[in-house]
Amino acid sequence: MQTLTLNVQDNFLQDFLTIIDHYKDKVQLKKDKNLEHDPYFYDRQKQLQQDVNDIDAGTIEMLSQEQYDKEMDNFFTGLKSKYDH
Image 1 (cartoon, rainbow, N blue to C red):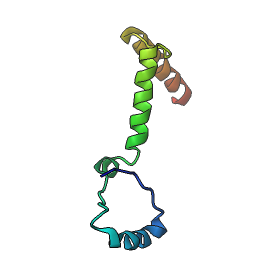
Image 2 (tube, helix red, strand yellow; image 1 turned 90 degrees about the horizontal axis):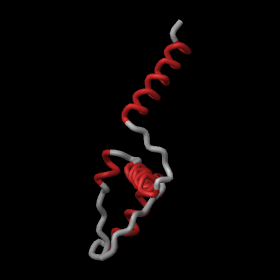
Image 3 (tube, one colour; image 1 turned 90 degrees about the vertical axis):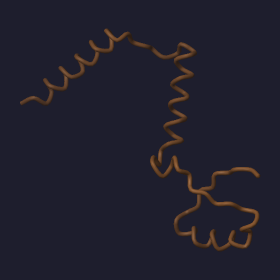
Image 4 (cartoon, rainbow, N blue to C red; image 1 turned 180 degrees about the vertical axis):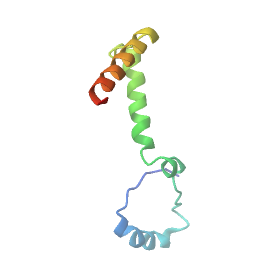
């Protein structure tokens, strides 16, 4: 058996289910639990893998904890001065 992902338009779903109903013995439908909890699960997974690949390849700048803290302090100071009336 092979697993595929199939996107079906909402207005066609019932027709689709009716069509494949004749093949119950050959087709198995399952809801993807990952998508039930997070509709963007696979997009996030893909982005995370790309981030890991970029880190491994050295193509992304990594900050030390000290650099990160300094950057965040500067960011929040900028926000505060911009929005603090």
